Structure formats: structure tokens, C-alpha cells
Image (tube, rainbow, N blue to C red; front, side):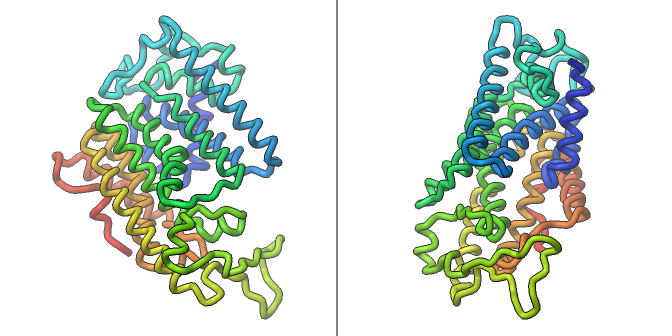
Length: 353
């Protein structure tokens, strides 16, 4: 199996589907860019299973297959003689940060079975210290989505966030590399939690229409509000238009929109505290990895600022940044990362707009 073709396939998935992460991944040198694209492509596959249209038993079976694939990949990596080309603490594979050079041979066909994403991920896992068991945590979180799990307390939600997003932070750290994994891994986890909390707020309306509520029940009780009071009405299929005189109702309807807006603002401030912790990861990375992580976090942080400034808006529509805004955040992250250390943050100083 052609590893070059496998990486190109993963990069194509990343550039077309990673609407936010792709801006940061593009800032990496080639070898790290390829490896992180492989991580993203497999994570995207898992996420697409959970969000797809298959019936619940078929989704759970597909997730079990994905778990078996990554378990087999990990077992192959642990075989004697299979980890000699893995990156060290600085995240650099043998041969530097150039394009893939083929390493010590092609990935085992027994583990990849002609699957381009697994071919690339197998090679990446041999070249970088990627914590493959973290994919199992991501699958745990997707299984919770499939089963319709809801969360009573923030600690319950935090466990979910660490599964579906903290795992991605730690997988990314395996590609970035760091001299102090014990310190950096919890920070990468915290940054993932911050991004996931932002996702939850951004998608609060869309998720509710799909039958999912992520925010903790105890928080709804504390603010005396409920999404159920809105009795959301789905838009009809087709062009999405509604009959004259009919409005698509949002979770702010039913007289509790002020309380819901206060809840959203509270959750946004909670997410900001997770960014504050997670962003202390940045100085522990090399400059290009810092720029990559800073760009990805910066895009989500700027979106969170927008949500916090207009909490009612997220109850009515899905908020996002324009491609121009995302590119500006990425460019600024690269510029700041290339400055002398301590000259500024690529994220927390983003202006609110």
C-alpha cells in the first residue's frame, strides 16, 4: 500500500471536513502535518459513525469495529522492532520534519487491510509517540452519544468532554511532541475540554433538534430554565421555508429565554477558565506546534467570545466565524509563535468583535 497516497487521502479529508482544525494543521511542518491529518481522518470516521443515519445497533457495531482496528494497530506497534523510528520528546521523527520518507517499510496489510486512513495512521504511529488508546476514549464518548446519554452534573459532562475532545488534545500532543509529557498531557486534555464546551454552546439549538442535550441538568435547575419549554419546531424538509405566519421556534421561547441566555453566559465563562488552563500548554511546544495549537484554540476561543457577548443569538442560530476571520487568527498565531518567548499570547489577546 502506497503510504504517500494514504497521507494524501487523509489530508484531503482534513482540508475538506476540518472546518476549524485545518487552519492550525496547515501550519505544521510536513511530517507533523501528515501525521495529524491521519489522526484527524480516523477521528472523523469515528465521529461520522456517531452522527450518521445508521440505526443504533449498526452504529454501535461500527464503533466496535473501529475500536478493534485501532487496538490491532496498537498491538502491531508494540511488536519487537516496530517502534525504532518513533519520534522522541521533541516530536521529530527520524529523518527530520520532511515529507514521509518510507521509514522501515510499508505498514502491515494485516492491520490496515487496504484502508488508506489506517495505512497513514499506522505509519504516523510508528513515527510519532501517538497515544493510540485515546481513540478508545473517543469511541466511548461517541457510544454515549449513540445511546442518548444526558448529564446530571458538570463532572458527568466533564468526563464526556475528556473522552471526545481531551482525547484529541492528547493525540495531537503525541504529534506535536514535548520534553515534559507528564506536565503537558493534562494541559492538552484541558484545552480539548475548552474546545468541546465551545462546541456544545455553539450547537445547543442544532443538538436539541437532533434530540441531544449536553449541558448539565443541575445547571438548568440552578437557572430555572429548560430547553423543553421551547418546544422546538423543526423546519420542514426541502428548501427550509415555512408557511406564511409560522416561525421556527427556538429554545428561548416559552418565557424563559432570559434565563437561558444567563445559562449560556455562565457556561461560556466556565469554558474560558478551561482555556486559561489549557493554553499554558503552548510554551511547552516547539514554535510551529505552538502556532498550530494556538490557531486551533484561537478560532474556538474567538467564537466563544462571540457567544458570550451575544448569548441569545446562539439560541436562534448556529454561530461561526468567517473563513477570513479564521485565516487571520491562524496568521496571528504563527506570527506570535515565531516571536521571542513571552512576547504575547496567540489566543487570549484576540479582540472581541
